[in-house]
Image 1: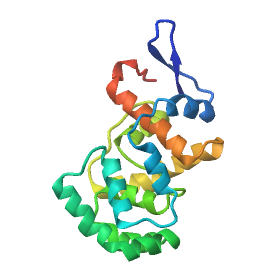
Image 2: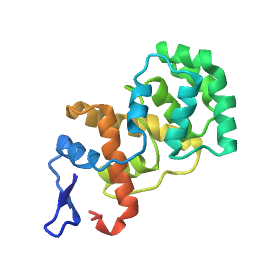
Image 3: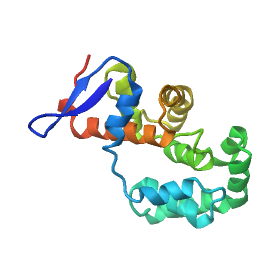
Image 4: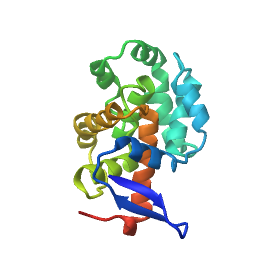
Length: 198
């Protein structure tokens, strides 16, 4: 299990600890999570009902910057315009209904919309958490494969069970777990020479 330790020279050193201490891993890596407007995200994601503006804001937040005009139109036409359906799915979720109405979205946006609708059930899924997941399960980082169907299959069949295993093994909530995986996955991409491969 990768744990980040401050060295005496104030550089961060990555070591591998095979004790499977998920609480220690989450604690170490979640502290390095840095993403703008986290408080607003937390406030919105916990609300019982989201407005059209809330949903649009969450997609811009996930994008990490203002949406391009094309992405903004996509959010408006393919997601926000289905406001009543979104309210229904937030109260009484059905994966079949979700897939019937939102399968045209990219895999990352589908996963994020699942997260918006049911944040306790569906974690955020992106390149960074996937990279962390692959390193933690195989000893090697790997980028997301191409293809929406492949990505959604990985999300449901591999990533969700892995994520839920971590949450069940710790007293941390899913948001803290997500933050730790995101920070570690981003670290792997930015500093590949710090990673030891078994």
